[in-house]
Structures are given as C-alpha cells and as structure tokens.
Length: 104
Image 1 (cartoon, rainbow, N blue to C red):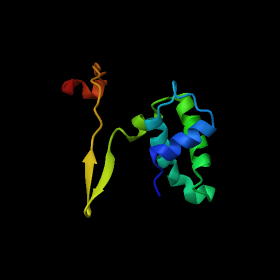
Image 2 (image 1 turned 90 degrees about the vertical axis):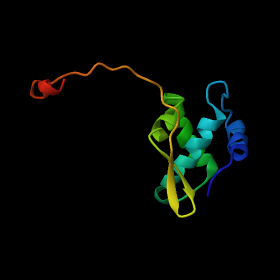
Image 3 (image 1 turned 60 degrees about the horizontal axis):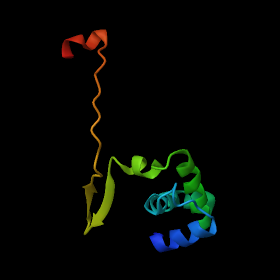
C-alpha cells in the first residue's frame, strides 16, 4: 500500500498541518516510510502514519529526505535500481589518529 500526495494532503489539511513549515512531498515520504511499522502498530491507518511522520518532521523538516538520501530503491522488472538524491558538497578536514598518521 502506498499513499498518494492527494491522500496525504487531505489528511494533512484535517490535521491542520502548517504547509509553510512542512512540505507535502516530505510528509508523503514520511507517511509511506512509516508503513514499515504497520505490523507493530496493527494498523496502516493514514492518520496514524501521518501523526508519526509529523512528530519526526517537527524535529527536522527534512527528516525523511535525510533518512532516504543514501539510496532510494525503485523496482524495475525483477532488479533493484539505486537512485541517488542530489547531494550537497561538504568540505571536511580529516582528523588523523596517531596510528593512522602515515595515511594522512
């Protein structure tokens, strides 16, 4: 089961989501990601999943993008293809440990 953006928008409106702070795309990712807890919760109710997703998004509005950034899988035929989200360049200076000094 996958919830559409239209379904998520309708539930978000009912829950009075502040769309200026939470993106519809991010909430849709979240609702569908939280379906992994369906067995534990005993429900795949969109309102329950939206509530869980909103809790995460209140802490970090890009929670699900960051969670899924390393790899998003789509099924094509019987093979899995990895799609990568655009990454931001981050310059980090390596810290050397004495035992690794020769590599730095």
